[in-house]
Image (cartoon, rainbow, N blue to C red):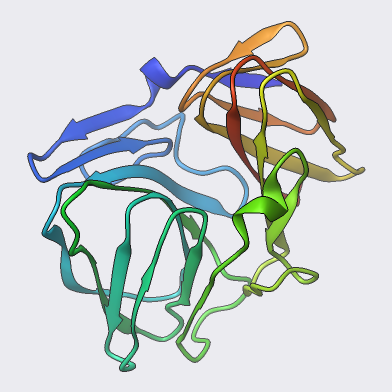
Length: 226
């Protein structure tokens, strides 16, 4: 099990954007943090009110945005315009190429996890979707957001789960043979075994984990082939 302290990940303050990079991205380059299996990017972004990313291109990447606070507004060259809020997800398969923008049109900051996963093949047709999950569906249990058996499907053998574990509650995540996980403590503090797991800390492992919430704890797991 590899534990990643939140103080050791990349951080940049661009004024309108405060961003934490779990892997090398833009101006943050760490040769030891280039990817984890098909997981290429995990950015923890905080966007100021009435600011955002103007329209820009992507291709051959599965892009998932999990909103933690506020409302994130998406626009793209396929004609989609949607806004998702806390606990909801938007996803885009960039495929052979697409332009998109992401904005915070509200009066409070938006916080989100932006996740990029390599697809299993190149040059898929671009697609967009979003899903408004019921917040209660993740309280003290795993909610399956992304994967073959989840509402959101991507072009990769990978799954994303989330839980909101109330204080003093415990929850297990089983890792099956030839699989591995990347885990992020989004909010709060928990214990994994005897290890303290704080906001923005992460774990890379192929072992089954037991979580105990020391405070209300918001935890995300990305599960994939070893």
